[in-house]
Length: 66
Image (cartoon, rainbow, N blue to C red; front, side, top):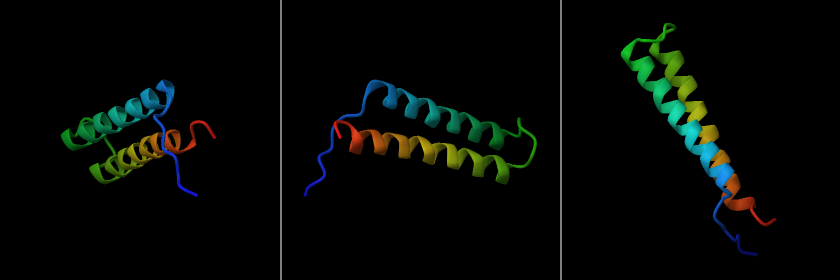
């Protein structure tokens, strides 16, 4: 049985874009030193936010219409 990929809904797409943008901003703030706590902690947190956004988008593509 082949996996049928479909475009995600607008809400899933927009949510994943907001998560990706938030992760990018958080990463930049960590690099520039605007957020205390060390870059390693902030960069790690930004990475997982980005991965959650990617997973949300992937689930939206795979699960629409199921």
